[in-house]
Image 1 (cartoon, helix red, strand yellow):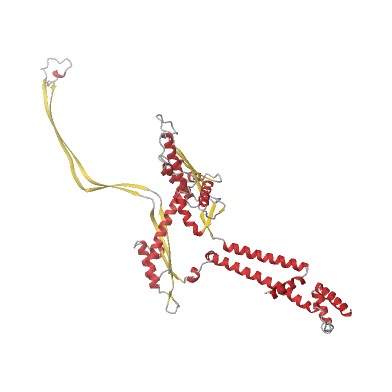
Image 2 (cartoon, one colour):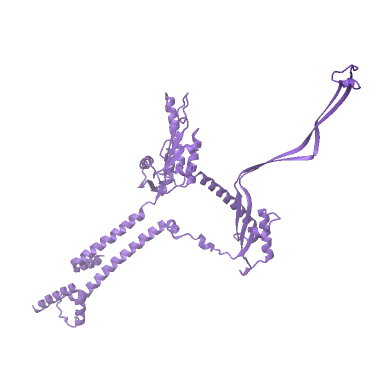
Length: 515
């Protein structure tokens, strides 16, 4: 050990000022890197406790973590703690009702307050409703935080027009990402069904960028209806496609069939009323017979016969006589009403009737024992086509070839091992602790090797110059055979400082020998 110390001391004395500074800086740098790596590798692995917190929840959670004496880190609006303490802290926070989600909920009624007025009671109830709704809306994907404001009109004896309907406003923070219209519509229905008497059209949704998200749903009602029809059509097509694939999969093998069904849906609603009469089934419903008989007698005067009776003055004609006639009149009337059987049919055609359906099916080629593709015969393809047609309910009078197409093609099947192999990023997260320790050890070894190489280089330079720095002895020696011109030239080109030192010592030794 003493020998090593003496050698290092002698080596250090022989170094120049610049070399000493370089060695010191290199040593400090290496030990600093090694210390930083050891500190970094020894740190506890931090895991996310809760993220996307508002200021109130963030301060409350940090206080609980500090009270438990657990190390923590705050990154933005998220709190990170060591992995081994995360589960226990979450249970402690849950027992205290944290995080609250930016508002008070029904826990406001956990404390019993005597002498509270009815107005305060109703106000607390509305605050609880708003807080619970805000917490629920925060759970929707894409919503970081939310606030709900509900305006409930007061109960009055005189109801004024337009002042008796509750309204609500919802403020959501999306973090710079747009939220889908389906999520906005879900928020409106969620709030409307949670508040008594609130209509979904009276709920306004606004994001943190000042956009009125609910306005798009109100102005695009026709578009929303079309979107609903397209969604209904996609559901029908997906149902029939899965039906065909599940039927053919046992025949062609798992993953050996792909089916796509296209349907034409009638979205019009209609009502048809039809009355059908049966003339063969007539029956007498009512019959009435009326009979009327009249008898009338009519008398009229008659003139006498001869010329005298027809003269203007009548002459001395004989007086006229009266003639009578009798008339008999008889009338009979029969009225018969018949009842005919009738059938009234009222047909209500709801929207969603399938008018036309077509299918395209692709099956994979068969493989023999050696893995060679075997082409199916036309009879086999036709049999598969009939199976698909029967599954879809194609009518017998329709041409099957125009509605169902079955094709056999080779499938490009990916390697299962490659699909199951995790990606590079997943592997980094999975083995991050091992990689961190390995990198720390590797960097430490590399730095130590560089330091040893630097020391070895300085030692080599020292050994080259060492023969010229030996102390003089009583025995005479000849320096000339050892110091050749080639060696001197090499020393001058490589290390001028060491050569100058050696020459100085050489001259000094020469003067001493002369003395």
